[in-house]
Structure formats: structure tokens, C-alpha cells
Image: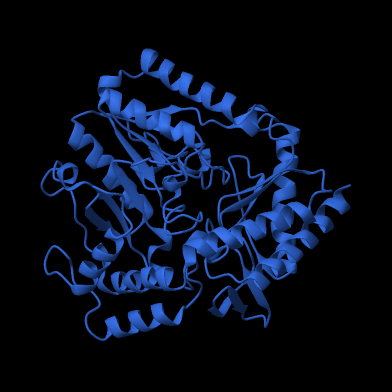
Length: 429
């Protein structure tokens, strides 16, 4: 009998990789693909950056698995020191896990243990993972949480300030969302039982929508007032992706209580973390943090190398510069496409949304928007450009280049994406 991958693992592209380097994936079909997916924002320093490869190879020759509650290893100590250089003042304690979902669950556990409170307030449109607790917190689409109920209790959802969806100004959307949060605390969940607010600085699967700074400040003020924690899921937005080291740094003066990170921290090696003040982290119960593979030595060495590349090659500023170039190029080249309702981006985290954003989910308009986005994403493959879709109704094509992407590669990406869009939309017209 021949084994096969699960039929539920649907590839977004038909590409089979032979090898990859930088911003390019070279397929077994002999074609060279400009990769604007980066493993869903993971290969931050590009594919197979020589510094990361060398660090992993060297570490493999020393020790591969050093279970970090049994013996400590140098790469994890070095990674913690380097990560600490980028953490906000006062956030000085780090716990390592394997995936973003696992880190999210560790953050939830810490919040409940530290506060003695049961409830987590999550924001509509957020994606936090597929494991049971993480999926219970995820509202970017029912596909992540349906079919295996009951989910984790103690989760309450509040609206995201989604100006585009409602046809409002950003200020009106923020006022509405904060008022709804206050109403929620008056009618559904007592503030004295809220352990934390959990939010992404930029929605990931929820549509690549930046969280307005005034809303984040509103969450911080309410968390302080009621004695809750502010937990920021920086799994996708962190490590320079948005043109700041952390996505929340676009909100001046904001300091969270807990930061969750993963994806771009090790250029493709599986490692994640939560960071919090030592006093707060110490409130977790004994035995509540650990794991067989958490903080793996090879992954940690790759993380040290990744952060070194980010610093030496000035990749945070490059993400800001190349992101602005990509956003401007997309807006100029697609200005005449009526099927596009929005082109937005924060650093190298960009989304192109199709259709009428105010169309009700499940309506003919929403279904057509999803069809267009999928058709464009598939047409990009023909143009040898790899992209992905996202958004609760699948109406957004997201572009996530590596932080090392060059100006020439950005221009090439714009040209290829524009050709794909025009081919689909001109045909649809």
C-alpha cells in the first residue's frame, strides 16, 4: 500500500520545489518563481540565507536536540540575549515553544494564571492558530474552528474597527469598536473576570488589515483600568515584517504585557516564544511551561543567525522602504481596475482586496470577490509569481516578500501581479 498526504492538504500552487535561494523558488518544472509568500511570512531573510544555513549546519555537528528543561544549550541563551535587545523595556523573560499556536496557548495560560481570571477577549477577524485553544480564539473564518466542538470556554469576541467593511472613516470605526467593547463589558463579560485582551497589530488571515493605533491605545487604557493584560499576537507582524521590529511599534508609546512571536524569527526553522516581564512570567504555575522540542538547539542557532542578518542588513528599514515601493507600484499599476476595492500595506505585509467590502458574507457579491481573488492568485502562478489569498470571505490576495527583497524584485513582482490581475479582470469584464 502506498501512503499519501492527507487530502485536506490543498496546495495553493502546483509548484514542487527543487531548490530555493533569496526571493526565488526554483521548481522541478524548470521554472523560476518569485516568491511573495515566504512560507506565510516565515522565511524573513529569504530562502537559504548563507548565514542561517551555516549556523544550522554548524549546530547540527554539535548537538541537535538538547531538551531545554533537562540541559541548557548555548544557542538558546544567545537567542534570548539577542531577542532581548529588541523587546520593550521591562519585558525581559522569554518562554520558547515550537509553533505560533503553541505560543498563543502559553500566553493564554499565563494570562489566566497570573490574573486568576477566566476570560479572554479576542477581536473579530483575528487568527491565532488551529490547536483547540488557539482555534477557539480565532475568528478569521469558521474553517479554523468548525467541526470539533466543544471549543475552549471563556472566550468572548469584540468587533474589530473595520472601517472598509462598514464604509466608515477610521475614526468612526474605532469609536464604534471601543463603544462596543465597553457595552460588551456591561452586558456579557464582567471586567473583573477578564484576564486579557488578545489582538494582532495587523490582522493576518483576517485580511492584512492594520489595527488602528487609537484602538490599540484604547485596549491598553482599558486593560490598565480593569486589571487585565494586553497580549499582542506578533506571530506574523513581528521581526521586521511591518517596517518596525514589532508591529505594535506603529502605535507610539504602546507597551504590551505579553508579546507572542514565531514565523520570521528563525527563517523557517520551527521555534516560537512568548515574552513578558519576569514578575508576570513568574506567576505561571510550576510545570505549566515546557515541551519536548521547544527551543530546539538547531532552531535557536538559526534564530540567532536570523536576528544577526536582520541587524547587519538593516532589514527592518528595508521592509519599510521596499514595502512603500511595492504599495506605490501596485496602486499605480492597478488604479484602473474597478474590481479592486482596496490596496493596503504595512511594510512588507500587503493585501489587495477585490469586490464590494460591504457585501454580506455569502452573498453573490462576496462570492464573486472570492472567485476573483482566487483567480488572480492562480494567474500569478502562470506569471511565475507566488501569492496567497486571505480574508474571512477569501477576497484578499496577500503579498509577503522576504525582507531581503530587492528593488528590482519588487518591480518585477508588481509587473507580474498587474498582468495577472488584468488578465483575470479584463476577461471577467
